[in-house]
Image 1 (cartoon, rainbow over the protein chains, first blue to last red):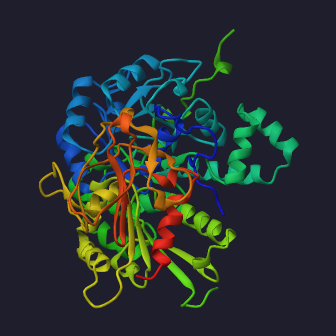
Image 2 (image 1 turned 90 degrees about the vertical axis):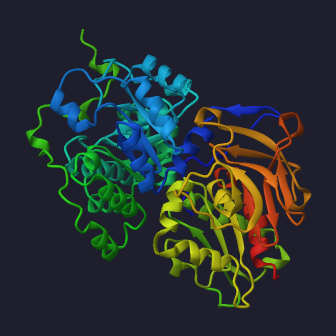
Image 3 (image 1 turned 135 degrees about the vertical axis):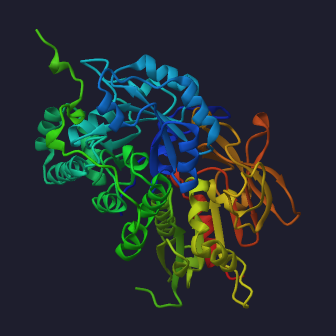
Length: 316
Length: 228
């Protein structure tokens, strides 16, 4: 029988009579409750309500959707706390917000605001050239982007409770999300064929503890919930990613940059649950109006997916 | 492999949320029941399937409504009168025996007869359990907690259990004498009921599917199998 991510098998149980908060079981548990769901980028309370009405399982509060960050250029930072608070007040579903890679002070502020999950995101301008946030220090869960198994396990080792593909956000092009999901799957398949000695070498190459790699091999999947993100624009994109084995999806610019956001939001949410039913997908894909225009990944000036901070980048 | 009479068929509502975790826990629980040679399960097999549309309810001996986002699930249930099909499944009026149904977290909200602070138009309930509940009773994610809860002896095993409460709902009141409280937060933390049952329906505000202790799933399976 396959194991499932996050099911606690050791430790992490409540001490006698005491109440435990911020445990990894609780953090990964929130991600598990999002499974089979769609997390939608929203920039104000009204969009948040549209997302909730459509059946989104959470919203990502941010000032500018990735497509606008690309258009505007400049440094992209954590959103205005006021706008995040307005969104938190507008909906009952979980609210996520983004912090810059390595910017633990932004993450502390978001935790103080009471957001339900933090996305340490390559969509914002990285703040630390060497390190990501030490996520194990926080009481609330983090989701982080990954392009391959090594990157995913490095983030999990730092304390991430959830992984998503990086894709190429703000492009409306699903190509990179597909690449990342398939690479993670292929890396795990390759690791499953290795013996203990080979796994030790591979773990070293990936810069992760061998125990974490072995756990992944045993489970045959990432040991935390894994979503698709970055460039999904249609119900078919959602179905494609779900069939590649992800647990749910993030949709950013794809909804509110299309010309019929409410309807598109509705149909993309339906697509996550009914991804195996092409006849139903045909029905809900009808007459959605134009999707966001989209950008070919080869034409973009800045590839966000390559943003990962690690010590090796340090210049002498 | 079991014939129709020996196969126990349980469905897990698979709209959104932790349905895969419940399927895994049900299978583990059943294996443990078989391994301990429990009389009621001897010679039986378990089939667990995902329920995504009203047709999937056909022939199920029991149903689990998992945790997830209750607003998300409600949205799906309002399409194609899925909600009507569920109400009919839970309370059959055609002489069929009532199935065993278990709701966790969001599932408890859906099974509650009353939900306080209901948002206008956005929600719908299946109902059936005469309790009054509230969403996100303890607050946001940073207030999520684990605690040892006091368990009713009818569950068997240890009198305490590690309850995992994630943005959990609360049971504000038990509205009928035929409801049994199955677990409570300990006295020093307020003694609130966190699990309840009435006949074939049960509900928990916490997440047994996120722990490796399968006693809640075993309790539910025995309820499914035991004839009314």
